[in-house]
Image (tube, rainbow, N blue to C red; front, side, top):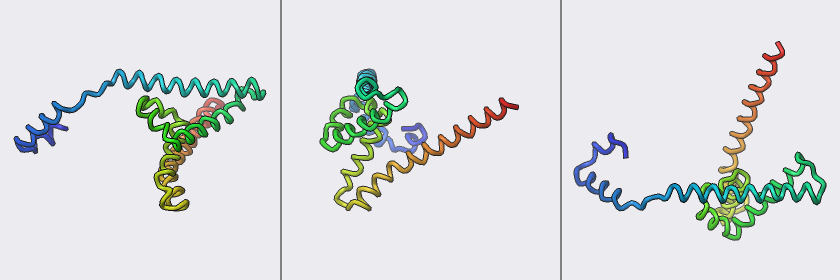
Length: 159
């Protein structure tokens, strides 16, 4: 709580804030960071293993092996979310599950599952894209800005 807000509290409210803060459970930051690092690394290692699998057994090259790898990671993330495993994994690993592809797939599929009782269009579709829409718009806009900067740098370099 900021000092400005704390000054507006009555003495009883300040005592309660102090009482509550003393009994607040301590957050094991180091343990959480290690778990997130390990889980994120495991997810990335699985992705790298899938990439290697597609290059070895299906004769993909480095550029083209990425597409089926991402598709499999998305499928597994949605499957684990729908079976309820992803929540348990996320509780243990925290931010490690936010590895972009799997975390985004989990977010979209959990929104769809949560609102399926409202119907497919307004429930599933509408709530999935409430979450996905801003991410997609931000991604497209960021790509546009980076492309403009890149073109400008190349144009200035050619002068």
